[in-house]
Length: 355
Image (cartoon, rainbow, N blue to C red; front, side, top):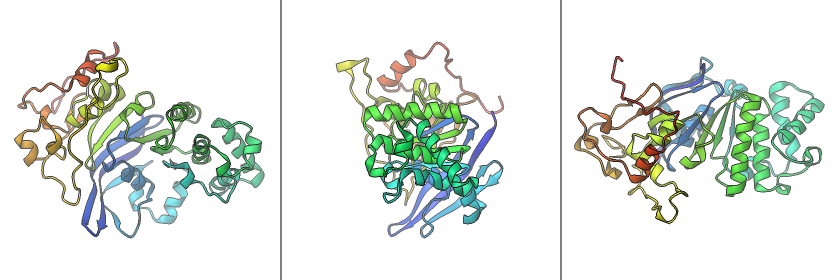
């Protein structure tokens, strides 16, 4: 499948009163045409900074891309001027933000807000832009779109406002859609509706999606691949089945174990990952997760692990995958998932260099 976006060795820092925060430390991933890549991790792991760097929306006064490339259709976005980025932002790469109320202008009707991007990027007439805006409101499931077109954001519920934000992001048929925790501010029922809507829209408009969330459970029915972030790095990446049924990194084990399991009922005991994420003004020398990892070895404190390859699509950054590492049993929740692997999922075997 053809790659539409590639992030290579990305390093991003922020200058603060407490020192330089090394927020992104060597992130690598790609996005293929038509796929959904979910990026998951705790708050502060670097998910939103990564995607805002792609959009070039970081504050100019204290942020800096220190190294790396962001290749979109062969162009390095880190090298483009602001005027050049404005031609891409909103047109080719669009973003859905977490809180719809802060994303919408309360003084403008939702129809005009949808029309803005259509007129700017597609040189459409006002009548054509209005017709498309009404079609988009209908596409995202807003009833009576002609009437709703004339209304203001405060006249919509939270779920409907998020649908309007999605309509705005789709106005120019973007090739890449970034959804930054688009369901966090919504209740569980509306959350499920928005997730179903995004899956349906992806099939209709054939766009590629980067889905950001701190909740691993949300991505199970949405994503094709999952990247797990911790301490400003991607520490595991694989298909949804590989991450959910055969996770390899202890941090991913913790995320899996912290998900409620309705099948276990009262027997289920939720796991809490001990400790707190690392201080990125002074990143750890070895494995960033080592001090919270009950399986940590001495080497974890002294040397950063490489990215080990488990299969052609599955990678994990942990010394536990080294051939000389001791065999450890993951938490019970992870063991149980491995026992319930889908029939069509073959457990990967470690691929050594050169194979």
